[in-house]
Length: 218
Length: 55
Length: 248
Image 1 (cartoon, one colour):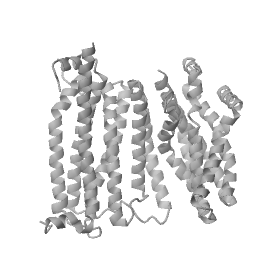
Image 2 (cartoon, chains in turn green, cyan, purple):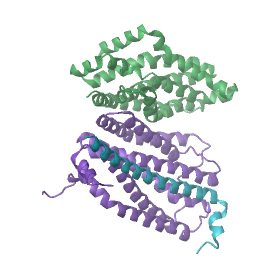
Image 3 (cartoon, helix red, strand yellow):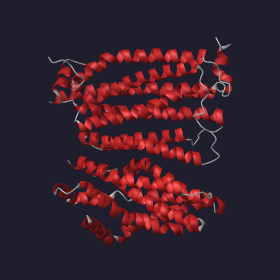
Image 4 (cartoon, chains in turn orange, cyan, brown):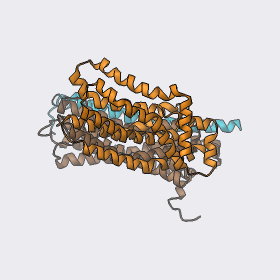
């Protein structure tokens, strides 16, 4: 499994610009909101958790098209299927690789965005932690969507539409955690629910992705 | 009969727009949907007959 | 011939005459219960103490919302059966349910908005039930988009089944998270669950309309299933035989 993760990492390294696009999208998209609603700092501070989270959600999902796409195109995906190795293991490895390449940069960049929105230190910390818990869930859910739409023309947009409804609880608890801190309440409830979602998704998503891959490849 | 007149029934104490807007759209949709389904079914049989002629 | 069991009708060729025979009865039930429900709702049920006449929208809104949820579960169930047991008709039935389910979801949202405006002053209320209903619409649209995007019918069937089942599992999670979200944000004292205290006549009218919607759903879904069966089975012998004898 490490080999698979390492391989994806190397492939991403060869196309560094492409790999960084979701991060750039994240920053640009979040920056659009002040331009759209005005620079009034109180309002921006209130909007900030939701805005950052929605942009992270979109940035994560938009990069899913290529998750299995290139492996499918060059036949290596079929080889992995035939080799008899666990497809669920493959799905988990792919999700981890996606998270390291796409999700983790978002987590690391989020404090910068938070500062743009004038978030306080406690809010920033909660934001980072909530994204740390939430972005892996997005990668795992995204894997299911990517496998289901393998090889389809409308792939990229379709994945986003399929996965967004499923990702809404993540958004609610993630942004909610930061909002709770702003309101002076403990984010514990939100964060534990996020953690529970992560566990549930870790258990269920690789298995569902494996089933989807089998459906797509048979 | 709790309605004194037809115009009272339609007006619904000023809420007529909302009530008839709801019922009207629902009626329209529940008329269109079955018609579309029947049309699809008839078209399917026509296509099946046509494909037989090709054989 | 063996005693017909429920699996007898799993053959598409058997489904067609069964559905055709049921059709007029389904529409009759639909019409009858609709008229009864509407009569009860408008002629007998009194105006509400708090909401006046506007509450009469619930005779459509609540049954439509119930149908939207039940149809989603039915869609996921039949899709799952079609996938697990490789029964094509079950998958076809599932595909036929989707547009009707989406329609009821839309009707629930539309009537919800028209109920909200005169009663609470806004066209849209981000309360738990309406928001969950909106997400349900997205789930339906996603399913339809996926199965329509896949050319191979069986792959489409199975992929749709997986998506529908994943969606069904998520529905309680989504509903719970939306309720959580809703109760936290003060300022929303509006709740669509604050329906008027139901007089018996109101409840009866609502239940009559629910039966009417059920019959409607069966009728439309079966019609669409018949269409899908012929579309997919057009080369089959029983279809060819019927076209030769000049059907429909």
